[in-house]
Image (spheres, rainbow, N blue to C red):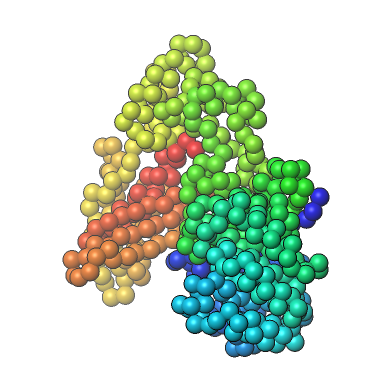
Length: 506
Ligand code: KIV
Ligand code: ZN
């Protein structure tokens, strides 16, 4: 069995995801979690790009001791010197230097001939070797480069001191067969017995994990990955996908990683929070649907034996053992009976049949069934008065008065026919309004995010407000839209409260 090194680029290529910009403290916290996860190398950033990234690289280089830390630099003296300065003389920090090798990039971007590039590689890698012990060298756009030319580039870099050669599929162009062939070709034609072979694959055709596996099969030693598959455009190979695949198919690939799978869920959630990008619901391993079963046939099999429809269990990646069956349009009687049993309701044939028919009827017009909905259905069937049924709160009216430094918010909210009122004085309007709402309905969630954005230009613009709240371990996101930004804020806050109370049955 061979160990495959995991080079994590969540903090570098992952931060190139449009819209992602971690703070220095967030980068350090993610780096610490990546170390716990067991990655071999953390690419901390690209020091020359900004003062903040330079500082973040310095901090990560100081604090991370178990994983190796790496900084990125283009193949020029200024970038390399800047990366070196960020190491503060720590000889254990490595550098990743890169330059493009495809004719498209040489002609349009670098305006260099192949001969000039080879001379430049020799000069700059030799210079880098005076500063760094470990050097990773990448031919950017390698998969669209001439094979024999990149053999010459990589050989030059190895001869001048590169310890790892990285093969990027920069534009996610390759297929698994082509990737395997390229790695085999380089292994065969390079004089590189002591060199680590690495791949860095983008996800433009959705083939990043498959290409990384093909590269492993062809003998490569290291894969560059990002948590949740973050990265430029469609992203990079998702670390969680590669690590779980090698766990399940280690025998076939004769390979393993040192990733502590149990840390995956926590790492994914941390990165999603700081990147402000939640993985798509059906994303492999870390999407919210990744372990849920909705169809009746699947639910029946799952209840008889989990392995009928589950190749990884959620506990393996550190997810709390949770309800894996979602009651919905495709659910069967076995799952309904299971839900009734788990919730201490009768499971005689008549009750199960009525519950089944009623749930199916509701799913004709309601997309997602909440726990409150399911309780309401069964309690109606059993003729029990239903305290758990929660209808939504609605704003009826509000007013904001200003008295000196103080803001006084009055609020009226309705639920069914009951009216709730409160008045609150604070220093700022949103605080006063939100606290008045808490008081009116005696519900006090933790506010974790408040975000407001104008969605068009001019004085008539509408404000879109997003509010994130937490209560008793549950989380909800609410949205509100209005030309009146105070009303948009109220709508968003009440929307999040309604969601958290009527928790979806997932
Ligand atoms: O995709 C790419 O080519 C890169 C390089 C810096 C290796 O991210
Ligand atoms: Zn990349």
